[in-house]
Image (cartoon, rainbow, N blue to C red; front, top):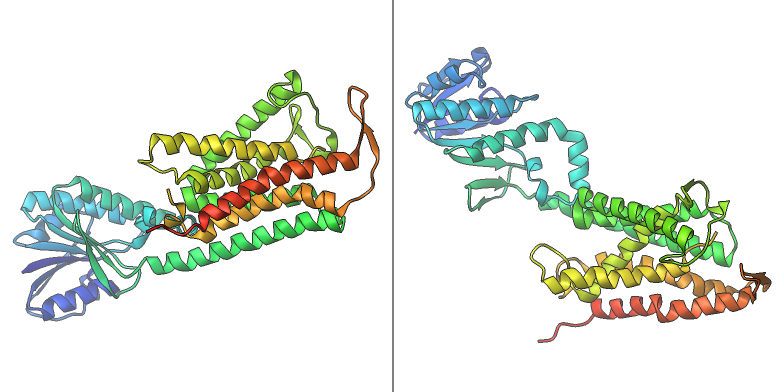
Length: 408
C-alpha cells in the first residue's frame, strides 16, 4: 500500500513510518521540517508542507491508498488538519483515513470525577480533538480513530470502525474507588458531627454540618447524573424551596404559619440562605431512596417508574421537612454501596430527633403563638416517635429492598 503519514517526525509518527516500511509499504511523509526525519529508506518519500495546508496535502495524497495522522500539536491543529484531510481526500479520491486521537474525547465513558479533572487539565486539547472527530463523522470517508490511554491491548468498536487501544476503565476504576472513599468519609463525618452536637454538646456550627451533607450529595449526584444533571437538580431545589417557604410564611400554605429567627444567619427574603442547600441535600437523599424502592429512573423507564419515584421521594422529603432545624432492581445498575451511602445519610437525619430524646436534656415549658404551654421533653418524645415510624421505617424498608435476594 501507498501510505501518507502526517506527524512523521513525532514520537508516534516515527514509529508508524518505521513499521509501515518494515511491512513493505510505500510511505509518503508530509512534514514541516524534512531534516528532522532521519529515517532512510528507498520506499520513503518526504514532502515538505503543513498538514493544515489543503494543497500540500493534495500533493502528498496523489496516488495514495490511505492517510495516517499521528499529529499532536495544540491550538486547532487537529481540527484544521482533519478538515484539510477531508477536503484533500475528496479531491484525490483517497477515502481511507486513520487518525491518532485520545481517550479524553470519550466523555460519556468517564465517571464524573474523571470528566471534571480532564476538562480542567486538558480542555483545549479535548475541544480540538473532538472537533477533528466531528469533522470525520460528518464526512463520507472511511475513518478509524485510535484513542490510546496506553500502547497495549486493543479492541474494535463496531459502527464507525473506531479502534480503542488500552483500557480507559483502569482510570475510571481508580477514580471510582477514590470517590467512594471520599463519600464514606463525608458520611462518617456527618454522622459524627450530629452525634457530637447532640450527645456532647460541642456546638459545631450548623452551617458546617450542612456543608458535609451538601458536598456529599453534590459528589454522589455528579457520579450518577453528571455535573450538568446535578446542577439542574440544585437549581430546582433552591428556587422551589425559597418560593414555597416564603409563601408559607406569608400565607400559611403549604407548611403552616411560622417564621425564622436570626439564628440561622442571613436570609433571602424571609428564608435563611441555609434552607435552600438543606432542601437540595435531603431532597437528593429522598430521591435516591425512591429509586431503591421503586426502580431506577432513566431514559426509557416506564411511565409508572417516572411518576412513582418522584412521588414517593416527595413523601420521603416531606418527612425531613417535619424535623428540620427550627432556629426494578436498582442494585444491578449501581453497586449496593452507592445506594447504602445515601441511605446512611438519610438515616443520620432520621435518627437525630431520636438521639436528641434519648440523650435527654432539660425539660422546660414553652408557649406557642396561641399561648398554649408545652413541655420541651414531650415535644422531643413526639418528634422521636414520628421519626421512628416514618424516616427510620423508610430506611429499613429501602435497606431490605436493596439486599433482597433475587428470586430464581
